[in-house]
Image 1 (cartoon, rainbow, N blue to C red):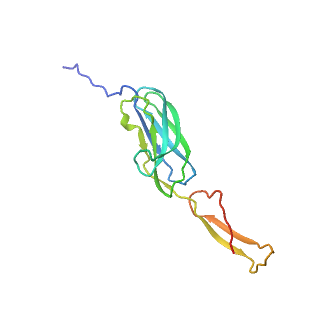
Image 2: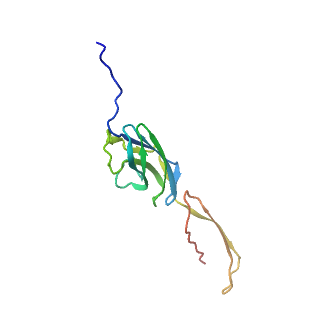
Image 3: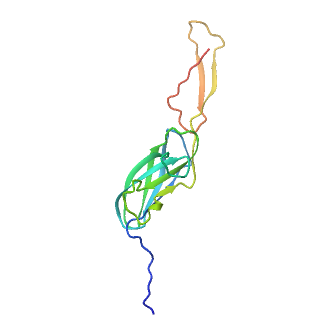
Length: 171
């Protein structure tokens, strides 16, 4: 009989997925930006939350710091691009994974709840500031009670800013 027909499956209700593109480098206490792409494979969503997190591994858990949050409106079969900005917490140098979560509070009933976390394809390397004294010099003679000039040069050999630096000279 020729009465049979098939159509592609279409989810009933929203189905949100998210992807994240992470920068290659960053530093503790530094600003960071990541590109998020949220797609809706189902019916429209008036508003959904999202979050950007940083993790020592590629598993979403309570140890992951939240870098940024926001909301987005997504129609049927649409995608939204978001440039998420935040500040990296004071983490030790090393490789970290950026993860994005759509509907992080699970407020929207979805056709598939298992695809709400996106993990960056490559880690972001964090490197702290590493301040180095390049040179220190002064006069060859110092006299008590007479000002003594010291000339010093420092550089930051690390990957993050060296803010609020304290230095001292001891004789």
